[in-house]
Length: 510
Ligand SMILES: [Zn+2]
Image (cartoon, rainbow, N blue to C red; front, side, top):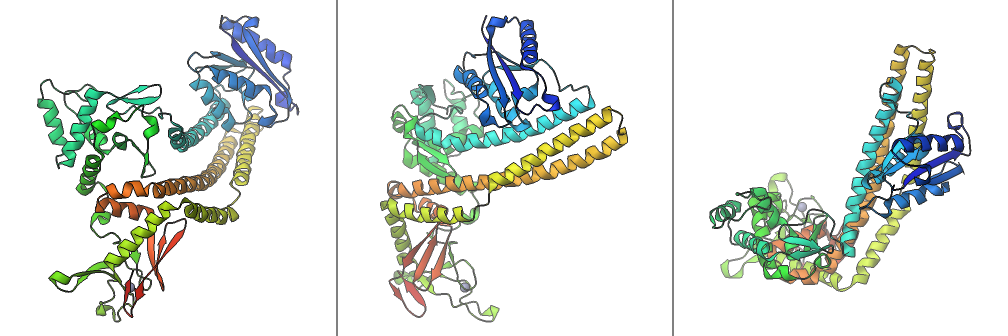
């Protein structure tokens, strides 16, 4: 007979509802486990006596949870027994975190005394609270997992998501399946040559023998084809937060390069972009800095104007209000020589890539500033969670009043509605704090993504088309401000000044 776990907990502050002795708990667990065929010797006991109410003071609980998770594929314990569910966790949030762990390890949790009876109005009610908190917790877990994904990929493990078409997984690394990878190459080359998904689908349908879709269908779906073209894993890159990173570490070797050319992948994706998969505004112009340089006076984006004659055409960024006399007065924004400013901006950014210390310094300063006025999220959360606990207690008290006939069903309904409303408001606030906190997390992730992107620029840049370079710059630089000495490139987390070489009354040359 395999082993099972029995968990006993007694609180230091023996409250009225917590006065179940360890002996009583033990006897109840033995009886319950026997129903599942376990003898007393099959039970591994974990016992926390006199724990003060904080998780950190529980000695045996973490040890038990650790043991449960030790052997994921062959569960260490298939069953865990407690006297009642409140033994298992100190609050509903905590309950769901641990219940999820048990579930993922194939371990069932059973309580000898069922406090949650769905037949009774009270039981139903408590159950609903549990379900709500569970959802909240699941969302939070999903979020954490997402945040952790990239760092896992960095450490060299495939993320455990669907293995992309054309690969098999061997020792957590992607290995190319040569036959299937030929198809990937064909699809990406087709798009690079201006064909669409229908072309690929028809080719595969008519080919003898027919080339079946990844799910074994005779006809490929358009989304499957597009999904392959869009997936940067075929050029050994990883997409995170809208940026591409080197994903060499998830591959067993670099054989995929034999089938997919990076140049064609970029071409194919640029083709898809042109097809309007991205907001048209960002693709309306070939000019490197259009819709990025803002006029300091009227706030409009500077546009390209051509001056001069055919053989001596000069490109310039000009404020649209500059020659707009209809507004009553013309804007004093300087005219910026396009060729030299574009070269200067690119040089400044590539120089940044050559010197990681500079980025570090900038980012360090940004973090210092943020740290200075960061609200106390943990404190706020703690307060709100305490409020939720209080409401839960009030609900319990209310139900016991009802059960003892001290309040009517009508009064119960009224008070219940009030408490539910209060609970809803607090949950809203809690979600808001969570979101703020998450944004700070996201900020750190963005900063990391940005500095990694900048540092890999020297490799990326020469292989990119003008369009791609433009997209990359507009992704990195949030906006460009005109200053008396030239420009400030605003990266969101720091600004990089670029001085102009010459400034006449009307024009800036870099
Ligand atoms: Zn202007």
